[in-house]
Image 1 (cartoon, rainbow, N blue to C red):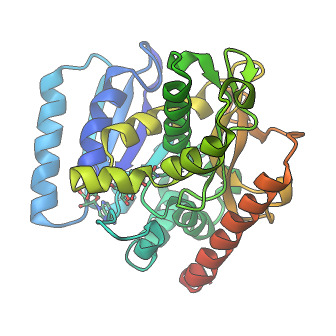
Image 2: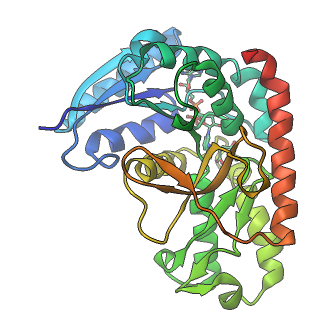
Length: 330
Ligand code: NAD
Ligand code: LMR
């Protein structure tokens, strides 16, 4: 029997938590022979803690063979004690008509205390994935607050956007989703993100050869992916949850396992200055994982003027968000 991996999930009684936890406990995250211990973290409010108890009861009732234990808590020290992965989901979602960075003031402070508690309590190999919006800047806050934890351990999620882009291209070309490869998101998980079709392929051919309507690629495709979160809020009345939980499973697997040869995945990591993104910003890049805890930014992709202009705009937004929150961690 392998040693269990301890996974903390904040906001465990929320929508995403409800869709996420059974999948982690079932083995969909780390595989069918890897036990897990779940650390479920919620705010210290009766309603949230009661909902959390219900979620834990349901997990018990699934009788998952790989679920070796459940910690339920609103105490951050207990919640992050010895965890190998911290999945930071708990935060307020936006409502209709809001942009994700309208949440900065409400959500930013959460990630200071969580970063400090992770640094104090987590396992030496801890890795952190931030989902709570605006996730790039919240990941930056958490990273700054988590003194002593190596900066490369902090990531934020654009895998949902990558999956959305892949689905849009497959539908447009009328091909199975598996025929579309290399979809890529640059920048911020926001309406300025850059869904890149130039480096994607359909059945091994450049997307621009298969989809003749280049205007659609440059306009409708990009804006559909950029605004998909808002479209779901408009349709459902609440933000994406099943697809977000699914993308978080993908995101963590992308970092836990080695990336297949010749491929990349969209992950927000700390920039080293690649592709003109200022060092230190947490921005989405093409990433490869070595399956041993290390990752690297894929180098050498050519950026045309169209992409360069769009990446500059998303970088400007990230810099602006960092400016708004930097007092929280100074
Ligand atoms: P939700 O309101 O259903 O659940 C959020 C949960 O977090 C609640 O149970 C709440 O009590 C808890 N919470 C709030 N503050 C907390 C804290 N300080 N510590 C622990 N728990 C806390 O929201 P949701 O639909 O699950 O969404 C959660 C977040 O994920 C939102 O910010 C949303 O915008 C974001 N999101 C991001 C992506 C992405 O692609 N990055 C996708 C979907 C949603
Ligand atoms: C999403 O992309 O669905 C989430 O970030 C939720 C949102 O506010 O759009």
